[in-house]
Image 1 (tube, rainbow, N blue to C red):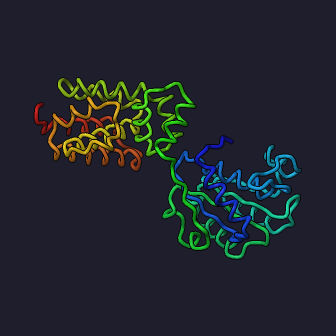
Image 2: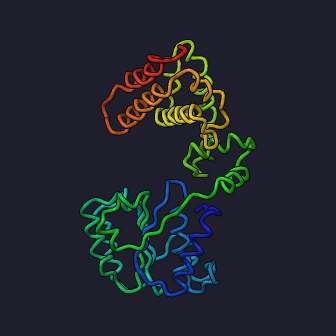
Amino acid sequence: MEWYPWLNKPYYKIINQYREGFSHPVLLIQGNQGIGKDSLLWKLSYWLLCKMPVNLDFCGSCNSCRLMKVNTHPDYYLFNAKNASIDMVRNLISNLYTCSHTSNRKVTCILDVDHLTKYSSNALLKIIEEPPSNSLFFLSTQNFSTVPLTIRSRCVMFRLFPPSEEDSILWIKQKCLQKDESIIVSSLRLSNGMPTKALNLITTSLLLRKKLYDTLCFSLKQDILQLLPIICENEMICIDWLISLILDAMKLQNNITEQLINIDRKDVISLLANSFSFDTLNNSMYHWIKCRNTLINVTEVNKELLLINSLLIWVENSISG
């Protein structure tokens, strides 16, 4: 499991709390997708189950560490709530009430805990209310508010934050061949500051983004529907990119230039800012957000008609055509 440098600080902070006698059995960790929640929980579990930890790290050589390395530790339980059934939760509870096999404690990691069904959540609640002795629970989520309040109230909550933009740029430069900092920064901002998502954008989607932006430049003067087949290659990500361009154009119209998202494509931002009024941009952004939500929430929808409608909104009230 890959370890990211921005996880070191939260890892050391949590481990030091355990070393100082922190005893609460349930820790709920929030972090955006791609920040490394799974890796953090895995390493915390590794240290807690290690029989001979070396200060803030696990030894890597004891029997517990060897079992963790091959994912066969009998006192370590891991599952994703997205795939969990009530029977899985019941089996977990049954196992936790048996004696530890090789360690002096048991560790349970439940990923995406907010995806547990109502019955599974109720079963989990019962055991975290009165957990077996020497049992620890690590729960993860992307958003605290989506976790049932009854579970949240029994947890100590810990929030993971993305690294600084500067640190993220350095990490991405080490991971790929892209050295154009404006492209890296734009990718980061399009990825809500998440380095792993930005790296994925750079390595897999940069050509699609360029094609979308380049086509937008000349289709505004010709036929806006030329964007349709490009958007259809990946509707959700292309809509997100278009919304980001509209936001940038609205910022530019108000002389807000420090936090533009698409800093590598100021040509496209300027074109939108000069072609449409603020109200038109705002209206088109509303329609793109509505389009995106419809694509997410409505299963039977005519995608092409929906996208055509959102594209035509752009040209209805343009300033310069």
